[in-house]
Picture 1 (tube, one colour):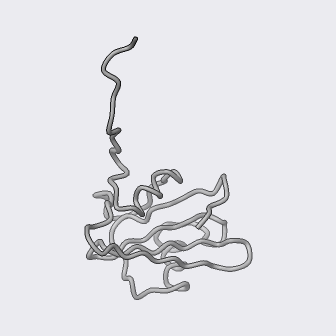
Picture 2 (picture 1 turned 90 degrees about the horizontal axis):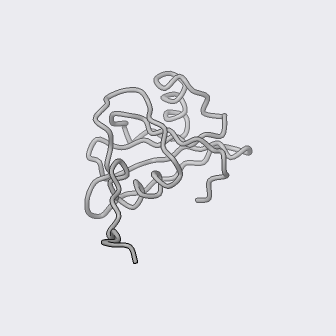
Length: 114
């Protein structure tokens, strides 16, 4: 999935019923997140167990619904129970890989210069 530059990514806090599809998730965006699901933003939802996420995105022609399930581990999610959190494209990429996007750490630091 290639997200055009300038696209905002919103993570829906709390858990979502993963039985919902296009219409149900778009209704959550409108009613609970008070946003426009047809504005071209990406909205990310996580199931109660934490191993499944769905992304809802209006690409200009129609709504797209992407899903990913981790075979091991859980998607890192904020403690907030309602509202939304803005993510960068890099944070979304880490989230989808099962990496803790809130506190990424580098694996190597230079020890001295010269």
